[in-house]
Image 1 (cartoon, rainbow, N blue to C red):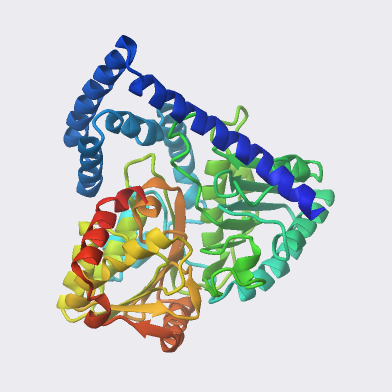
Image 2: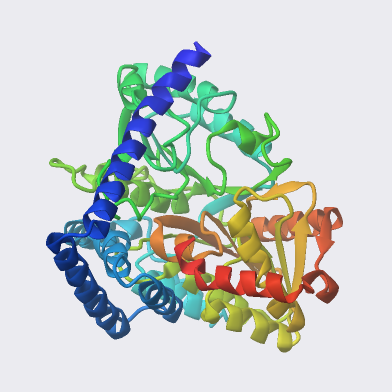
Length: 511
């Protein structure tokens, strides 16, 4: 059975890769052959590269992206412009942008069905107001009360709670993940979903095709639908030399009846519950919302699910408190948010920067990757120089060597300016958490790297003055004893290493 499953998984993958390679080889052949036609093609591609450079300079975009692409085009004047068109221009299709804008306009008033808690917070004139107003008034994600939060410091505790809550589902279960893989974690969840679907619940799963490219058989969607589970494969990976594949759905959402919801860094695969040793001990984090704020994550799911659907759902019909108000006792303020690469608004980055800039005593950060632009670098170093205790935990064991080496290239600059860097020595730290001043925290899916901050669909939960804030802090402090603190001596390197790391940082926006 295992051999058959491996064949099913890799059959389409090998075909897709072969088709892509064939397109690249054909293009190389067309350009390199000594003929009049190849000279004309080369000349046209050079002109395209010049025009692309002018376009890049004129765009309102991160300087790091501009520098990387112009450098690439200078290095490869024939292919550089074409490469940019494949990997960037097509990554923001007009059709998807229009669909998202229409969905946002339709959904925005529905986020406020539980009521508007912002006026109550404004009466306190709390220092967190600028962040709350940005997320609610501009990004469109309201702040809620009447919500309990529960923080999970491991995939194992998250998994057990998910199983418990799924069993309570009555009307619907929505699930959205970047990675699914059949095994000890996913299979029991699918069994519950299948049973709930037979009982009449509306059960839906959406997963990213590229994220599951090597983890699921190609007929997995049909496998689920045959069992009564609705399924969408986000942005299917096709054997066309194109960058429409560039914007991936990196969100992790579980919504149960709109009353309970989960998000965080944990995908549904066995390494996330340490069922097997992939990169040492897998350290991760997630959060559960019970109450009004769970509705927000339900809407975020529905917006993505309905992209391109001929008959979109009536979102309001899923609202769980039509007949009676939510009675969950307030545990501080909770503000779920989402980020889209299509709308040119870097919500995840802005949440992180505001937490850093507003910190008075400390800001503690967990991230698997630390590949950031000047904006975040300046925020981190300025905060440290101003006397704030800035600490960051990254992994010691890596999942992508080049990305890990690029992460380490930032250490020297940060440590030199007072930021404390730690590497989690027991394995791989996949958590994405910020916590500051015993008041504010965020738990979500957004890594501190270019791809996650600017190219992927992401989500998170901003929490303020509730019990989970202390749990996030306690988890961070409990992790420090099994970390190695990076010193300036650790960042010392010879000239060759320094040059290599500088080259890696130059290409950081493409990682």
